[in-house]
Image (tube, rainbow, N blue to C red; front, side, top):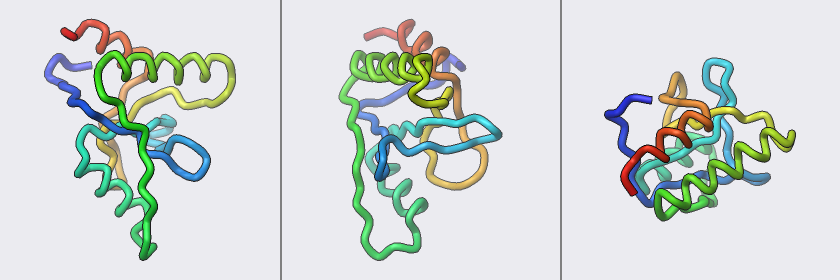
Length: 115
């Protein structure tokens, strides 16, 4: 990951009917991480543009420690076979390619950042 990337808190994992929303980008299955509350609204409007009423649900991550803990849980559940999502996509609010990295690489990056 680039040293120029900065994550802001709180950040948000959008939720769907059965769990975390997943995006497939260039063959990579990704959990979506939104770094701003305005992006949450844009995400849901883009995803459900044909609905009059949208129920917005997110898992709010208040700080770096919580994000690292959540990512470790996600990565461990992947290793145990609960899902096949390997990446995190950032600020997905439109179709197309999105910035993304593996969960493992993102955890390693966050652990090197000042807390």
